[in-house]
Length: 108
Image (cartoon, rainbow, N blue to C red):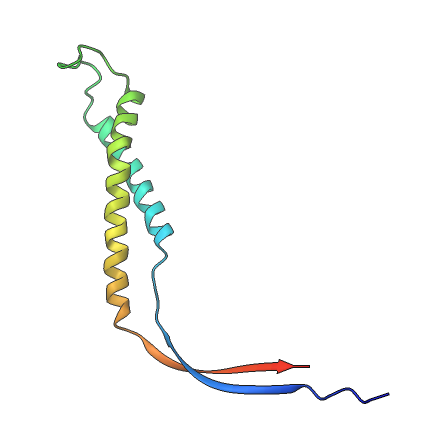
C-alpha cells in the first residue's frame, strides 16, 4: 500500500476594493410606507367625499378616495426613496478602501 499524498496548499494574496452600499429594497419599502401614510393623511385632511365629483357626477367613499390616492402616492414615494438611495450610493462610493485577501486553495 502506498502512503496517502500530502495535501497541496496554494496561497495567493489578492487585493479587493470594499465599499458600503445602501439596501435598495428597504428604501423602496420605506417609500411605499410613506406613500401610504401620505395618502391616509390626504384622505382625511381634505374631506372631498361629501360632494359629488364634478367630472363623473358620482359620490366617492373615503376608502375609494384612499385607494385613488394610494395609486399616486405609493409610486411617488418609492421613486423619491429610490432617488435618495442612489444619492447615498454615489456619496458612499467615494469612501472605498482596498483590502488584502489571502486566497487559499487546498487539494487532496
